[in-house]
Image (tube, rainbow, N blue to C red; front, top):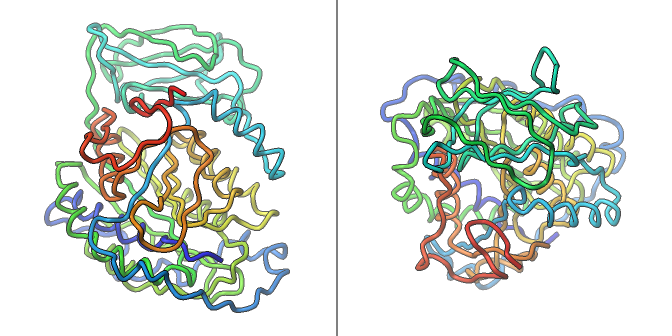
Length: 432
């Protein structure tokens, strides 16, 4: 198993969350600072198919000599929003699902819309429902996202063979609806509203799902140097927003625990202590319980209403082949409940996990993030199978993602922040 800068992402995330916390937050859903049930092992995670192979203990190789040069802010990463590049993703999905023998989400006949105000300005944060024309009840009830985008795949929500959809937008909250009947299409359609709209979420529920197997230890050192810088940069990300932090950690079937959930807390100090209490150990270079961990995170007590629900999942090893359906089901449940999944791929991420993470991000409106070799930190990182991306520092990227979601406006890297560019990139869209 290639040493994977995964822990790096875990601590990086902690710092970002610290920056977004509400001052003097006192409440916590778990004041004792211990897991809700230690350990929590999901029923599926302990199923026979996963326990059949008892992996031998493998000692991870020593870190690259480059690790001694690690310093704050040098870890680099890129990302892709596959929903903004849906035709290209569908081509990747068709090829990869066959080659890897993995389940393919039905992304045909999507609802791709951008809401705009009367001046043409994007309208994020508008409540929207979708229903079959003539149906009494909607099959989707949510909010327009970053830049007023709505990207919904009815077939993943149990609504297949839908050529047309009735969209109802409520720019004034619960007042009169703007009703449009639209054709489902991969081409994004614009809908103009009579009033302007801005996104001011009431809350942010932010959960990290983290692999804590043995390949994490070296990256913990690197990430611990990132905390201060990320905190300073992200302090304006969520002023006044009520934030809760959640943590789910996971290992491999033969390890001391399989999946452990700490639940939610509003105390960022407690969240930091949760992470500090974890030790990278175990793992055998084989399947890890990434699918069951995502499913555990999706089942947490998420808040409903006008807010942000985000999962950042960190890992590099795919689940057991018999558990990939669990990953798909968890992403499907997340999409139905307005929870966005952001995959953060570490080191030599395997093709199966890249596929699962990217498909899960598309289904839920998230993004796929990945480490790159530009920092010179750690061993080699796998190149993603995408045609364009920009490389920046990881801490800057995570801050931009969070600010985009909380402000409703996509935040791009400043030219001075871009270390390298692959392909023809323009505001998240690949032009090549």
